[in-house]
Image 1: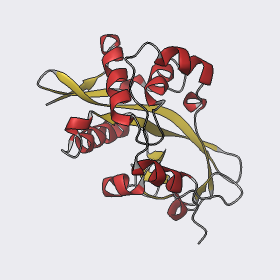
Image 2 (image 1 turned 120 degrees about the horizontal axis):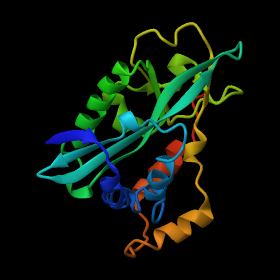
Image 3 (image 1 turned 135 degrees about the horizontal axis):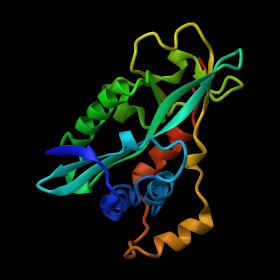
Length: 211
């Protein structure tokens, strides 16, 4: 197993990997491969934290980070990280590759001086990696909105203590529908279908913590 930074020569393989990993998981089809394609050129992208994991000379997993920010009650901004997509080829899932890639990236993020990561994700997947509910850190989307799927990990203990924070995601995650359609046509066609995981995604992405 080898974890290394992604290179330009890896781009298409990583996008193919991402498409296979997310196809029909959240919605029929997926857009995550286009997200990977566009976010590499965004100013908030952090190339030092763009990693692939190889097994027997094949890329089987990938993770990308961008900068985001938290704003406190005095309008002070704090630079933080977010990541995603985290992609693992379907035949390699549930075998610890995602965990290894995450833990490696956490250490590299610390070395770069970052002290906090905030993501939108399934709590069932990330609680074991040290992520906790945004409500525990008073991190909201503003106006008292604490999404169930908004998760926080302090890379340095206590870095968010004593403040109320508003999370601002990078514009790198905004997808242009017209650009996506043209891009997706460059891939081999796959059948769109329903999976129960899509309902789980809907529930988590539309629910909030009220207490």
